[in-house]
Image 1 (cartoon, rainbow, N blue to C red):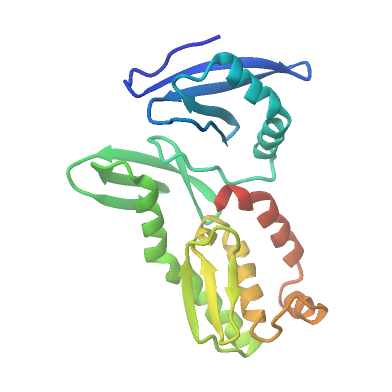
Image 2: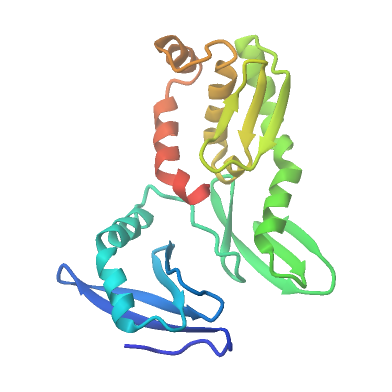
Length: 244
């Protein structure tokens, strides 16, 4: 079944359903004149969206959904897992942005001037542009060291190490790293995680200034300074895909 919900000359969207394993799998179809050949499936907060070129037939879309149904259902179940606390940002008005483990409301006010604010437990952005993600990530970068520095100082004293430099990066597949010349790299997306998770990652990377691999000695060193480090690793494994 289809229900047109967009008046854009370049986009049209509709809802559709298929039956998979005796249950209904509902998804949104977004057709785009700008999309030429490839189709894309995205799942955000349990909502399934299949993006296709304008000319793609319903039969082809149903075939794709059926082929990927098991994977789709797995991802939906993961996002409905109560242990997953971070919502994937959609960067739209009245959605949420994650910060230090919580999902805060986002309000977008279209204006001729630009301002990104976080106050009274909500994000407010004044802008005439639509690149909310870039503004948000720049805000994270601007305030990153106020979060990281006290933790780095704490564990540097405990471990008796002195990092040469701290570098904040936009990483896609790791939370941090330590180089052999004592430079610590930390992922900006860590600021979406709770403070105790950031605490663990900082300890982990600074411990590498003593033990350069994941040997038993390394994990012993981590455990001596954070007995529940395994629960932090478990949180990262569950929530990491929704943060990176």
